[in-house]
Figure 1: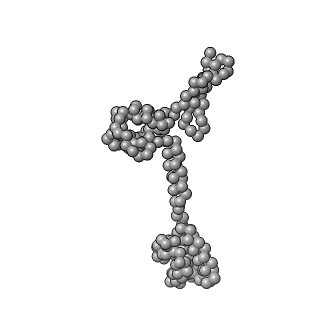
Figure 2: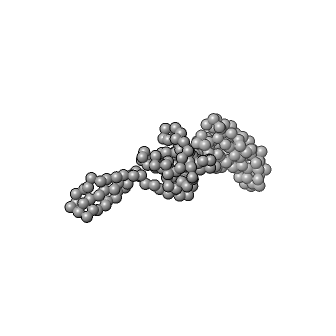
Figure 3: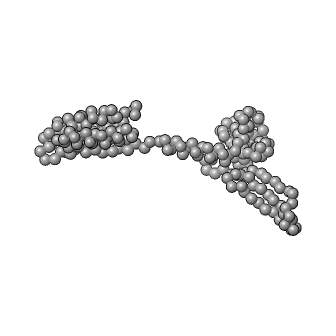
Amino acid sequence: MLFLSFSLRQGTDIVSLHVFSESNFRVSLSCEWRCFRISKGNQNQINEDIRAKEVRVIDTDGSQLGVMPPSKALQIAAEKKLDLVNVAPNANPPVCRIMDYGKYRYEMQKKAKDAKKKQKVTQVKEVRLSTFIEKHDLMVKANNASKFLKGGDKVKVSIRFRGRERGHTAAGELVMQQFAEAVSEYGQIEKKPLLEGRNMTMVLAPKSNN
């Protein structure tokens, strides 16, 4: 009596078939083949999922193998222990490439992950000033704002006029201008000081060369 044993190598697409005799001795028959997977969603059509009557095949080195039935292209890919991937399904005929699809997907996912890491999500930080702020306090807040701007974030500067301060909005606008000058190395005015009710706001954006 013979016994069959299947094994899938971790991290690969290779399936091994081993045959054992009843006496637990391994028979010399052994074979390996690549799994023919069915693609899902928006993934590329691969291997047996390719239904076109004919496909144009590109080899691993980029050379053209010509137009042929998918069955023949699959046979060539299987001999190389690789996959047949439909890279241009809208072409006439569709273009398929012989490649290691598992490795290809890993590289694409790695590139997408690296690109996501490099993306900077711009945030808007807020700095609150007062109409008659001391110069020292103004510079402390300006230094903090410069760090935000240097890091690629925008800064919203605001002043709230209380009581009699409402009659000194010009002084508040002067404070805004002094603040903008203090951070001019890293930022520039995106929205000029605007008075809305009791609040005056200004938006600073990072300089493009930072």
